[in-house]
Image (cartoon, rainbow, N blue to C red; front, side):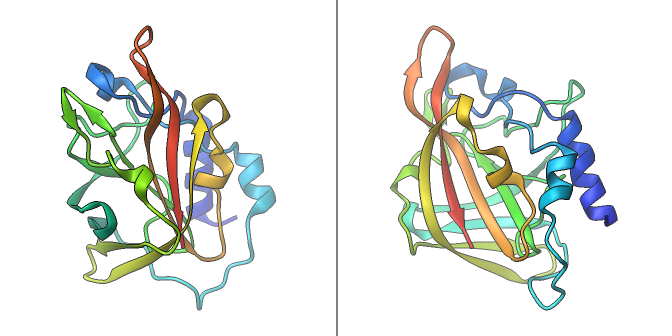
Length: 198
C-alpha cells in the first residue's frame, strides 16, 4: 500500500460527524467519515501512471453554470477529529487529507448552501446538470477540468462516504453541500447535495 493511501486510511479512522449545515452552526458541522481503512484497501485500483496529474494543491474553483468563481482554502481535521469546514458561507475549501484535483482519486470540495443570513458559495449547487464543466486551478499552474456525470440529493444518514471519498484509477471531483428541507429543531438541513464529476 502506498504512503498516499496509508495517509487517507489514517484520516478515515479519525474523521467523525455529519456534513455541512446552514444557519449559525456552520463551523460545527463536518463531513461524514471516509470509508474505513480496510474498505479503502479492498477497492484500491492498480496504479495507472499515465492517468492524471501529480499531486498539487488546488487554489481556485470556477463553476460557470452557477456563477462560482472563488479561491480555495485547505481543510483538515479539528482537534476532536471532525473535518474542518469554511467559517464563512461564501468560502469553499478542499479536503486536503484526501485526493487533490487532477490526481487519480475523488477530490472533495466543501461549501455551504447558506449561513449567517447569506447565500453560500454552493447555494445553487443543485442546479448543476450532467455535462456541466468545472475547472480547478492548481498551485502548479495547471487547470484540472471536470465534466459533471451526476447530481444527487441524499439523506445525511445515508451519505455515500465510499463513493465520495473512495480511491479511483482516474481523476474525479466531488462538490458537497447541504440541501433538502431545514430542520429548525436541530438547526441542520436534512440532506446533502453531491455533484460527481470526472
